Image (tube, rainbow, N blue to C red):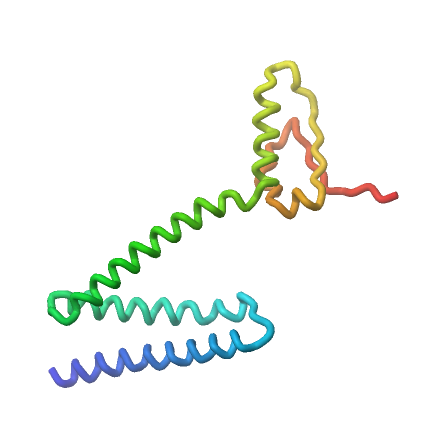
Length: 152
């Protein structure tokens, strides 16, 4: 019994120490002048593991009266995170107006009927390419797409 408690405490202390080191690294990065996502990504798995260990501990002690409030808080955080993810997913759909315009152009041409079956050429300028027009939106025949700019 005492050995199991000691092992659990050592396990929690190990993840806690990694979490503290990760927080210190994040604080150091936030104080520097250059903050890039590539420097933040190695820390995310440590936060995920630390939060999973905390949630597992809350779940294992869910029947105890003192763990009721942390359990409710954890449930609310998971629900809030799911809601925030859903909202951000719906909003991110509108981040690429160039891709939406390309899709609308294809729909408009298809709605014109059988009178216009010839080859169609689309020039993709810099701004549409930066706002969502990509190879994933290309349909193929009879469409041809070009990003080549003619220089004077």
